[in-house]
Image (cartoon, rainbow, N blue to C red):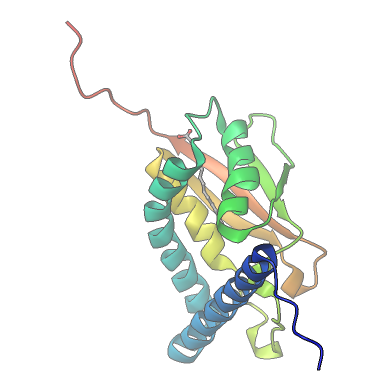
Length: 185
Ligand code: MYR
């Protein structure tokens, strides 16, 4: 019998990463399924997923800032780019693009072509009103609130609803100026 060739470290790590990603996807699916069972109403599930995401976002921002070395963004345009290119890459392993800016530079779309959360997912007819990935909108809202930006994050397109891509609209409602806590003499 031919000896089994040892696998390189890279191949083993790639395999571990793939298994971790699948586990993450399946775990997310299990959470959504459990919420559907517990809450019954799809609208309630949407709300709960958003709230869970918000609670994650307000904590995840610290990890994001510590690991990414991103410094203060000059404006909301830069913030949106950072979310799409650095945030999504760090936490979902994919990058997104930013488009559809309004004239004021306070509202844009984040477009996601690859979304590991929906691998293996197909929604039954009973779940047509579900925003399956609504946790993501909560994560963005929560993370931005921690850096003084109040936002509204809304799904515009969703592949699970038959669209070609995922599109999240991020609207800056209010930017709270951070106060310098000490008095200058
Ligand atoms: C600043 O101006 O203080 C920097 C702001 C950077 C905000 C980045 C928020 C990252 C959110 C990650 C979302 C990941 C979704 C999977």
